[in-house]
Image (cartoon, rainbow, N blue to C red; front, side, top):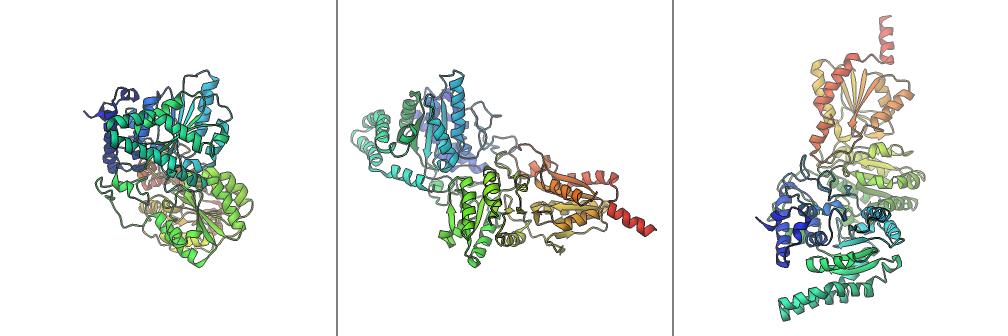
Length: 640
């Protein structure tokens, strides 16, 4: 039995020797590489926090002491040390989540994987412990240097420093990267800390002691290192960043020296006030393909060859983000007003090609979506057309700014929402399922949902041409599907994809749901039910032709991969009612629930979003569907 296999809970770490802890760290890295290469997942971040997580669990007593991870993708080692070592179905239905999960363990507290929130959680938990007299309980927040670029982190620090009578330890896991190298003034400062002579002298001293005196010298150095780092930190660094916040600072500490990290945490634990421990780590530590990867592809990987790090199921198909990036570069070459904005995710959202072609025309604001949106309004006022590319799940953090800074000021800003709809393995906090319901309340907004590569190129060009209102393109996760040609494009831009022999059912398909809608039509035609399938292209506002078409069909069905509540179906229903159209309408979409991690197909099937289930429901509904008033009037006139 390996050391890792003997760990069933954090207290099993207590009796391990230093040599055993080193062996355990190596076993954990080997386990992560073997396991994640089979399932996919966040590999690089977890390889970087092995010794840090071991030290945290040796010093603190989880779950009595609350440990909060920001973000949760760096919690794989935490899962292993708290008894969860079956990674065979990681991020798959029935398997471990890719983030902390309360359903899995009492050791997990914060399930959301949105960055920069951990210090607010820690502030609240520590205040609760204080108020309820639980003075023996500590709170540990593990926050990355990338998350420190988010404004919410600094709001929390301001409040944490306002009341120092709490046992709160903030561990800054500083690897210089979030998805990519961390940007901004904070990053420059932390880089200065990492490269200052005092810190380099500490590192050099370790090597010199070991070279001269062997293990005894190393042991002596380790024994004094925590105090030395604390002194250097307070003397050289805290006066510049943290002293004004009145938070004690220890560091920087070599995050891969478990003994040094453990000693610093022990020191922090004995303060009865907030302490910040600055730990320097290497993302991808111990795995050459990850350490040598400048593009940070190993932040999150699919199935890979563990020896080479190369993708096993490489595909020649184009990803939605790549297609968007290529199209945007083409437009930017023709229009010098176009600039790109990213919130610390340059490559995942497809802006790397634009940055390579026009470096000065891409702005990385860090993990600061609110700032990104309002800054975009300012860029638009200055005569540019900003394109903010962001995961759909993260735009909710900046809804107020979309409303009050962009829409209210009629700013020409384009939002490109990646991973819209059901994303699959990342779970509840990453499904982009709320954007349609959330954004269509914004006055004047225009929302498009491309069904294939051709409509992506068209709609992106149309979006950046709008200068007096916000525009939105929502792109799903995965590869661009085969082209779906239109039979006809109506005057207001609606594409007719299929026409049945009878005007029985009108299916309005939003974006990539077009393929499922066409399959529904194929299933219903042999049963004598005629189906017209349309792609509105611009789902908001509702096109007049959709109202007219609805008036001539017996049933309207909208299919969208967003929540039904407040979705496109609801919007169309309201417009039909306003126009006096009485055609029955059925909204097919996702439930208003937090959906688990699973394959996209499994989640859609569970929600009833398969062609077979939709077709069965339509057959049932058609039995009682009456002719709409417009059709009935025509029939009456014909009979007379």
